[in-house]
Length: 246
Length: 252
Image 1 (spheres, each protein chain N blue to C red):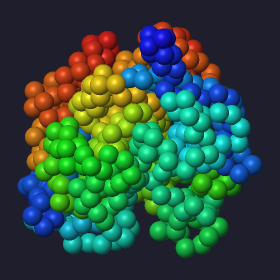
Image 2 (cartoon, rainbow over the protein chains, first blue to last red):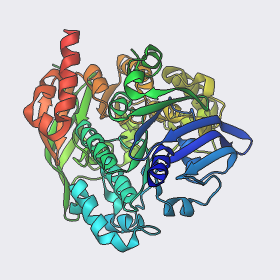
Image 3 (cartoon, rainbow over the protein chains, first blue to last red):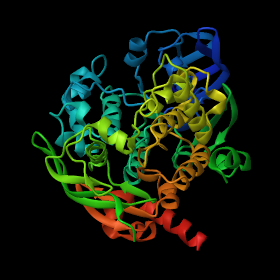
Image 4 (cartoon, chains in turn blue, red):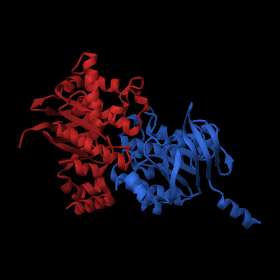
């Protein structure tokens, strides 16, 4: 009996999306997307600019309404839930374009990351983030708006980690980071995933994302055009032609 | 060798207690594409702000085509031919692509008709012609990056400062943008670019300066810089350095 329920938990995807249709007003950007992410898995979502990757993130996080289809997180339907309730369940989204609060200090920005989850362990989690990004510790009292572009990106990721996410959606985390930091960041994502955190990685950095992720989905025109094991996709001639310019 | 179009002489810039740039000196040869690379927070964007006139250096001078421009306002420098783009692109959302580009063209052309005609010309150089009458809001990230480039080009610059115009583009979009940048150079515009997309930096630039913690730590051709131990340690990391050297060997 115990074993059976354990088995069920293991096979149930952490995030399950079925035939998702969503968009803005009359424009449906997502035209029926299905996608699964298991606990502890890094899944890459790839595709050209404008195919709906950011819209997908926004629908999952409750930032835009779902027109049709199902989004479930750990078995509970979350489609149409408020962003706050989604975050409280442990699904945290680090948005594209940093979106830090420029007139608050680095530390205050981090503290806000635990506003509705893991508040009690705020101090410990700040130390954890500082250990990951020592640059943020050096600048903890500085206004976030005075950080360089790459430092703001670190802050956005650090703020996301403050809520102890179970699933972390990273929308273009490597944007504006130096090659060395991208390398460090991808190692770091691999490490946090090894601790049981699931990561949905939306990236333009196709080669390194496929290197890190176990599986990947390629979006085109609001639909899943290809999906499968990352290693297979990396060698897929169609993908190489469309996204790698090979 | 001809005189450099831009000469940055021992520039220091502090913000309160923070020294963003420390006695940095470098120059940019006329007609070149020159790269300015370095770790995050090294002071690259501050350096752009100092060159374009958004910030006054605490110490040091900026010379452009032989003249000292250190104390000049942004718009005066724009009239002299210095233009820049911004990392986070912010087009005028209520305007069309044509009108957005025309804002840049108005620097030298008061007449709306002339500015719009120039905007159309610039749009064709960056591949935005089909979008001219669409709202700037309809552009994808790649389109917005092209618009950012077009607005700066419409000021008819002699020196163009590009701040991460390839960031956020996927590999095939980068491949499409590289020839656009090269054609701008071929039309006689000198380009100084800040960029982390190393394959593009290596193929575009004739010369690269490396800034780390506010100081210039290395300079030279792409091949020299990518083998420099300090640059690998501070910026490239060993993985990226290896990939670049592999590409280099394949080309040779």
